[in-house]
Amino acid sequence: MKTFDIIVAGAGMVGATQALAAARQGWSVALVDARAPQLEWPAEGYDIRVSALTRASQRLFEELGAWEAMAAERISPYREMFVWDAGGRGHIHFDSAEVGEPDIGHIVENRVIVKGLHGQVAKQANIETFWPARPVAMQRDANSAELTLEDGTTLTGRLLIGTDGGRSWVRETANIPITGWDYDQTAVVTVVRPR
Image 1 (cartoon, rainbow, N blue to C red):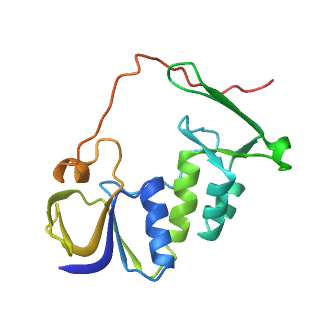
Image 2: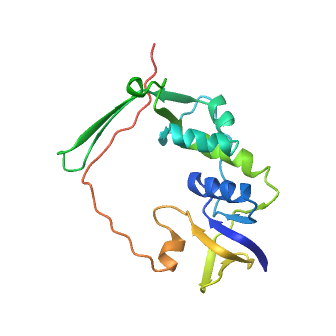
Image 3: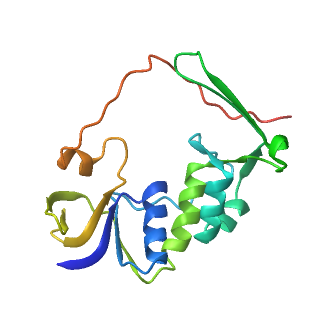
């Protein structure tokens, strides 16, 4: 049995961020994922999964030491954003010029975010990584959580954080309900290359 302050199940963007933030506060962290993070890819390939990071997210990634690596890859600033509610009645417009900033954030490929974060995870002595490692059992009480992995390894921690995605094994196993609905929409995502 391996003991940690915190177990983070899911090593994507959210899990890696949580693990780094906790480790920077001096906590021992087990970072678990069913797959090893993809940290290499063809230079000409683009990830169609992107995130619009705000300046606050940028500052957090700077504090965690990951932003410099992200900025060295492909990032694109955005200066305006229009947001509408699902019913189409309300809307808001953000403009960097109104607040005297050069931009309001950056569009970043998700894999670039993961790579930047995992570059820092690898440097943290108090983060131990487990992958590929699929959880198969979980026990909880008021003071701790125990996670058993497919290979028989048992992790125990004062806190278990499930960051393992929309179809979260941790959430389902803990019987935490969710509310969802079908948007009845389709999207086309593409990369445009100017000539």
